[in-house]
Picture 1 (spheres, rainbow, N blue to C red):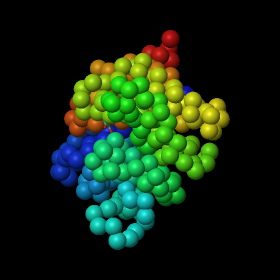
Picture 2 (picture 1 turned 30 degrees about the vertical axis):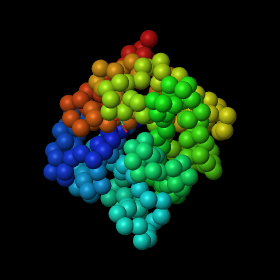
Picture 3 (picture 1 turned 135 degrees about the vertical axis):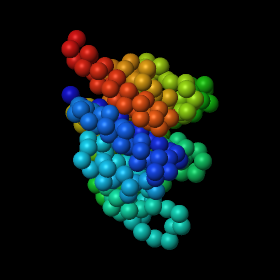
Picture 4 (picture 1 turned 90 degrees about the vertical axis):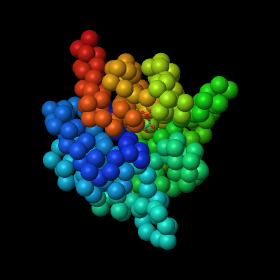
Length: 260
Ligand code: 13P
């Protein structure tokens, strides 16, 4: 069985001091968890400070973005080398907030994904439709296009080192979670796209996360779905209690499923 992955995307929240406090509490709360991969993605400024704290824990570090070049005259940007140096193993790419507010397109995101893989960083590639696209019943076309373009040129080896996160834009920060059925429906579609491109065996190994208003009380039903391999959590990852509870509830739900 695949180990689920729960990642906390802190977005633009937490100073270094706040980040250290939060991670210390999370670390104390999840020290017994071995059957779940847990990733913390704080703002860039907190990465270096958190790295030594996470070193002796099951928690891993991820960045929320990066530039596709390893260095250059790109004012305000951060390179893959820099996030690797501070201990990141993961990097979130193509988040809908990057697409929407910073006009990142799939071609640029594809460059980033390929660079991340070249530097042995695991990309967490986000895809997801807007409310308008869903209302127009174009959610599958929208996700397919992002999938095809953002993951263009990836080999079988590459895709095995990539995580995909389905985050419907209408469910992010709105408290309006996709129902487990809606999420599963799209994630099984993504799995089908993976199968068509890479074959059944490889497609079955790729982790597909769900993101969008994940909370302690809905993670259990989400994670039980066959194509939901974990979660990318925004708001609820900013409080130790709710993030720990999400991890606990996810592992409990999976144990219960396995025992059935
Ligand atoms: P929320 O959990 O706050 O809806 O955010 C989801 C998200 O964007 C994670 O990347």
